[in-house]
Length: 483
Image (cartoon, rainbow, N blue to C red; front, side):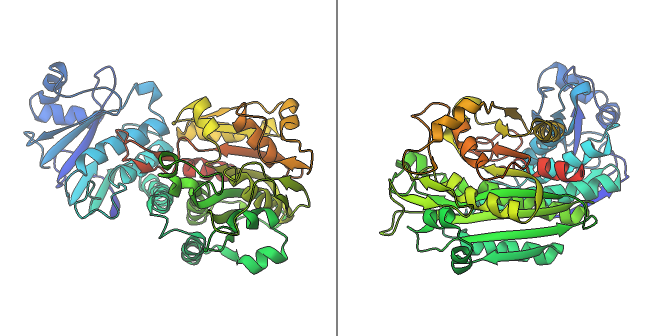
C-alpha cells in the first residue's frame, strides 16, 4: 500500500473515496463543511434525518455527492471536538477505512486533519492502515481490501511517522493472526532476523544449546513437550550515547499454548495462537523505534516456546531452576508464560537494562478484572509506572494499574522450592502472576503489562477486524521516545 501526504482540495481530489469528519454535536469538520457547501447542504440534511451518524466512530458512505470529484464520500464521527486525541483519531480513521475496504478500492483520501496536532494526525494515519487490513489471510474471498493508495491531507512528517507506526502495528497483527503451524519459535526468530536486517537492529538468537549453556531452565522446561525447540531473540538499538540508560522491552512468545499437561478445554485453546502477542508487540515496537531513529538505547527480548503435551512435557510437581538460580515449584503447567519470562527478564537485567517493561497475554484473571479492552499495569516503581501509564493514555490505549501489596508475595511461597508458579486458588491471579515476575528483575524499575484482553479481538470493532490488534506497540514507542 502506497501512503502519501497531499495538499489538494477535498472537492477536486481524484479518488475512489474521500473521508471527512463530523463531531459529536453534529458540527462539521472543516473539509466536511466544504463538501456540504458544494453539495447544497446535503451532509447537514443527512445528519438531521439520521441517515448519516455523528456518533463517535460511526462511518457512513454516500455515493455520488454533487460537487465532489471522488466517487464516494465517507463521513465518520470524531467524538467530542475537545476530546479528539490520538486514540480518537486512530479509531475514527480506522472505522472509515474499514468501511471503505469492504470492497477493493484503488485510492482513498482522508481529510480528517482539522487543526490537529501532528501526533494526532500520525495516529490517524496508523488507524487508517489498521482499519483496511483484516485477519482474512487465508480466505479465498477476502473481507478487507487494503487500498492501493492511502492519501492523507496533513503534514508530510505526520504522515511519515504515522506510516511507520502503522507498519509496526501491522507487523504485530500479522504475526498474531498467522496460524501456529506458520509461527513457531524458529520461524518467529527468522522473521525477527529479517526485521533486524531491514531496520539496522542488532540481533542474537539463542537456540536450545545456547539456552542450556545459559542455564535457562525455566524457559526450557516449558518447551520440553514440543517438537519445536525454543528460542530467545535479543534485538538491540543504539540511538543514544553508549553511557545513556538502556531500556529493556521483554515479550512473552508462547507461539501456541495447549496448557501442557494442565490441558486447556477446546474453547479456551482456539485462540491460543495469540499467546505470543507480547513478543510480537516488542518486535513491532523495535521496528518502529529503529525507523524513527529515536535518541534512546533499547534492548528487545522475546522468549519463544510452544507449550505442548509430549512425553517429555513439564509435569506438576517438577522443580525448575531458573537462570537467576531461583527454584520454582510447578503446580500448573498452564501458568507457563511467567516461567518463560522469568529467564528472559534475568537476561535483560544481565544485559544492563536500567528500566524494564514486559508485555504478556499472561492471565485470564486480568480479563476477568478489567475486561477485554483494558490492559493491567503492575510495578515495583511507581514513577516508572506513571510514565508508562501516561504514554498509554496519550496513545489512547486503555490501561489500569493494579496493586502490588506485599501480602500478595506470600501467596507464591512454596514449601519445597523458593516460589511456586501459581498463587492460592483463583484469587488475585493477575497480581500473583506479576509478583512472580517481580522476583526476577533484581530490583530494577519494572512495569508488567498484562495484555490478555486487548491483544486479540474475538469480535470486530468498528475500527478494526477481529484477531490481533497490535495493542501497545504505539505505547512502547511513545515510552522510548521520552528517553
